[in-house]
Amino acid sequence: FGCCKVTLPPRPMESWSFNKERGEWERLSEPGISRSYFLALQKAPPCFAVVADRKEASLTVNCHPEVAAHHAAYQLIEGRGDGIEREVSVEFRLLSIQEDPVLERFRLHNCHDLLETDVPLKKPHELYERQKKAVTKMLRVEKMEVKFEEIEMSEQTMPGSTGWSLIAKASRKASLRGGVIADAIGAGKTVISIAIILQGIEAARANRSFPRTSSASLVVVPPGLIDQWKSEIKKFTSAMQSVICIYDADALNRYSLKDIIEADVVICPVDMLEAKNYMGRLAKVASGSSKDVEVPKLPSQTGQVEKNGAKGVWIPASSADPYGGANNPRSQQRRNESAYFSYVYHDYIRKIREREFEPDEKGIPLEYFEWERVFVDEIHEILCTSKDELKEAKAKKDKNAGFFQEKNRRAGREFLGITTKDITKRPIVFRSAIFGLTATPLLDSTNRVIELANLIGNAYVIGLSNHWRNLEKESGRDIFLSNFLEPKQSREIRRNIYAKCQDYLDLACCKNKNEEDMEGIELVKHQEKIRMSSEEGELYKKSQSGINPAVQSFAIKPEDFDVTAGHDVSKFLRQNAKLACRMQKLVEVSDLTCIA
View 1 (cartoon, rainbow, N blue to C red):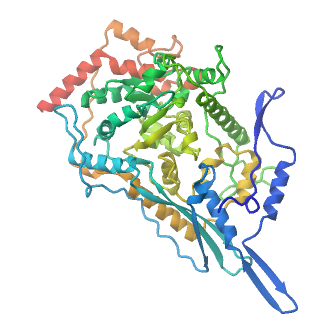
View 2 (cartoon, rainbow, N blue to C red; view 1 turned 60 degrees about the vertical axis):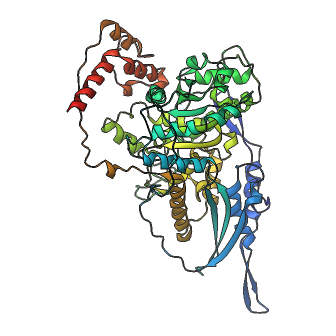
View 3 (tube, helix red, strand yellow; view 1 turned 180 degrees about the horizontal axis):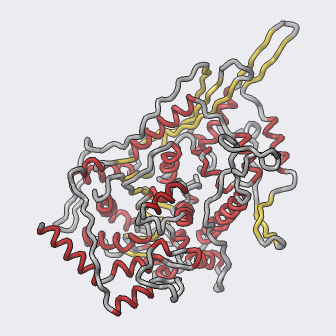
């Protein structure tokens, strides 16, 4: 099921061509192919066929449940690799009355009923009991012992006002390939991750091989946390001898293929595609050229979803703008920019994976390697955060607001391949599992849970194929087709979407330390002023890479850096963290706190 080309005509392929007159890249498809495709869709067999027989004075409704089954199965298997259709089973039923779904707040459960997994750390450190149990749950996921039923549904309504419909459900049992550690801030998510790496470090080293199978766990973090992760690893273990930090292309160029293959941990920023010269290096390696290659800039904004309703909008007395200015005229241009960047980026990745490199060759892009496992810290930052939430974070002067702007989230989603269903074709490929770390998992909607599951190991939660993120890069033609083909989300389907979202959270997520558990622990805010030496002051200003020397100052803040203007916030953050006077003051304040 899901492979019938009569019921589901193949969507036309697109290519790209540069329009010299306009100075921009354009999508191309075969002349007339869109019309042919639309006609094929209209000719596709219906689920219900009504036959009126005047002679017999009868009206017969023929039902073809296989049509609905093909639609449901196609959404579940499309783009996820060959052979998956053989794992799918289908069922259907006729419905006349549907119950309203009971939608409660999503819940995250602890794993207190699990056995403990003890992983020795550097003395005097030791995992807490709750941390040992979190390790147990995540290791079960890594060993593919946790099964999750993936489903997709298609509802076909009987013509007329009968109130009847046929719902087909396609399902497959799949092993989860990732999990989420969602403990509160300060509860030890980093040390749990280090323990997971430690317990499998010998197996990872045994698995490494040339040309691209690394023993390293890749840790993807906000740019300001790279050095913090490195220091935490050094604090808790001496068993990881090779920990590599990749800040940008310059840092990457210091390490050979052999270094990356034989590493235990590689740490890089989540917005790696925004890092200085990184895309240029990727393009250069992909083309095999010794000269610089022109690369498209990462779009500063995500693609836009076209509004197809006018609720609450004043409609002008003109058919030229039926949505009253609700749709930005640049929306399609932004979708095209996003789509073209993704097209070029994935083409680069395909080309570098077809190449082989010498062990001592340096500067091989991270997308070339196959990692043992992947950790994504602060994973909520790259999910579907809205513009309103970005504004709210800035209004609160959130410390992450400066370098987690919309373009940084866009870079993170692209780097992790959030819209690529086949995990073997994503930019970052792993063997064992992928884990997300977050204290604020953003579980206020089914859309967020669906996207989280997709990112963490490509678990399919019903509704993923019609997730709004898919429309960010669509052409005008495909926007029209998506509206034309968009399946109805009835009460029955909405009920199943909610239920499967909660099922996923139960199986994949762990929250042993809640914010409520931190009650009674007072948060004390303490501010100290420090004076830098003249030498430190010079280094501090020089670290403001890309900013005009005339405006460099001690008052510069992370949110003043704009990557699209060539600014590099990572150097600034690293220099700030390394200030000797700052470190000394932190020690003094900590000692005073302990004495008190």
